[in-house]
Image 1: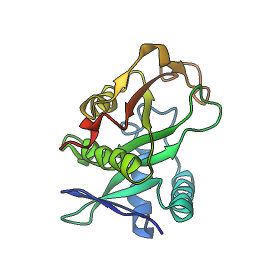
Image 2: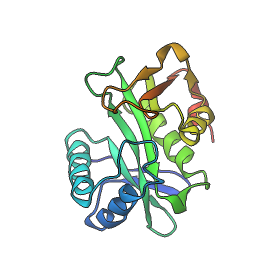
Image 3: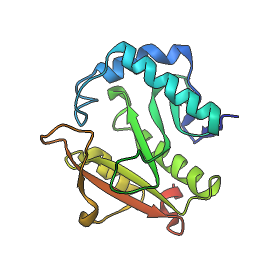
Amino acid sequence: MVSELRTDRLVLRGWRASDLAPWAAMNADPVVRAYFPEVLTRAQSEASVARFQADLDRRGWGWWAVELAATGEFVGFAGLDPVEDGMPFTGVEAGWRLARPAWGHGYATEAARAVVSYGFERLGLAEVLAVTAAGNLRSRAVMDRLGMSHDPADDFDDPEVPEGPLRRSVVYRIRAGDRRATDG
């Protein structure tokens, strides 16, 4: 059964057919995808939704669709996922991506707090990671607000990213005992 997370302003839920168009538009936006190697096609976005929902159906958690509780408007995604093979670390990663109109309202931090709390309280994780391109200052600010720590010794060149300015990545961590992540 897919878990649904709620915050004061957001609902993190399974994916709906109505999410596909705004998700594809987000992934086609070069500003939203500035810290990724490329924008995605509609077909790539649809395939990602199918994978996300399959993971949610299989294990009950993963990359949730994020909507505004007051209006039901889809604004992006947030969630937890095991770190992919081939990375220089292991664990469970928290992540988020929002459409540009949703930026600057604190939604990313609010959603991230919910998923980190879920990871600790429901999944019993000892630690949650977050990874981003070194230059992604907006995401790094969310990680800082969560109370995550960054050790430059953990920085790495992402093997899935072509040579260039986006390849250098940073890893942030928070342990279960550091509850600042779930403080409002």
